[in-house]
Length: 237
Image (cartoon, rainbow, N blue to C red; front, side, top):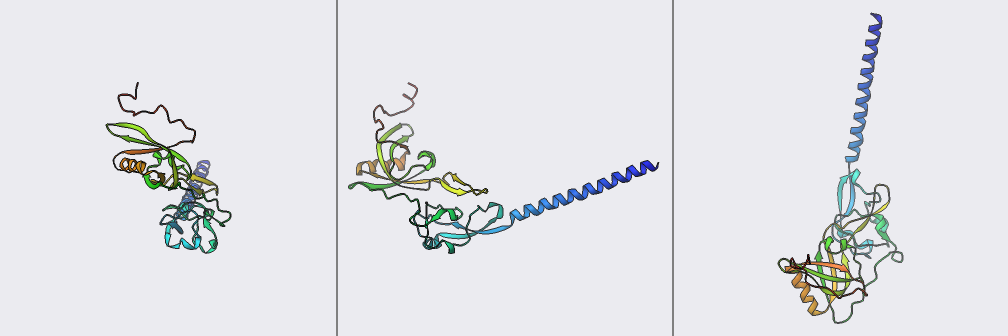
């Protein structure tokens, strides 16, 4: 009888201790979760900022946002006071948290050099989905093939080795929670500026209005032979 009482008492004690430990763990987990949800203020890009922009000139293109602490990227800035004399090393897109790693002294900034545009050409910008421009990996100075696809007609490459003058909105480099730099895909459409003769500019404007455009990276020695209009009648031949 006494043995049963002792066993019952021990079981009761274990149950109480287990309950206390479970409560303490749950309470600690709640506190940790709440700590991660506590809002923190960070600077976020509100308007696109081109590469090479002085830190002193970006104030009007930024806004302060409150986001959960867990969502704050390591290196995110709350002020630009310490960036004096530095410039952006890449295009900054709306929605990005402002990171210290995106700035450097002008002489150290890895900025893309200006592309020299041959005289007599028109510069024309196209706003395209990332999948139509190699995921936004094009760089100023590249040359591209221009493909046009239209319902009921087909697809065809209409221009070869077109000079890329500028690209805005491509992949960006951010710092992850481990402090490592990682590349993020484009946040939206890509703005690609091309330099073309007037007749080609007319084709591009029409295609942008009434068709779909794809750009391919086309090397200077890429063959231009063997192309044709591809439609349902020929695609399986």
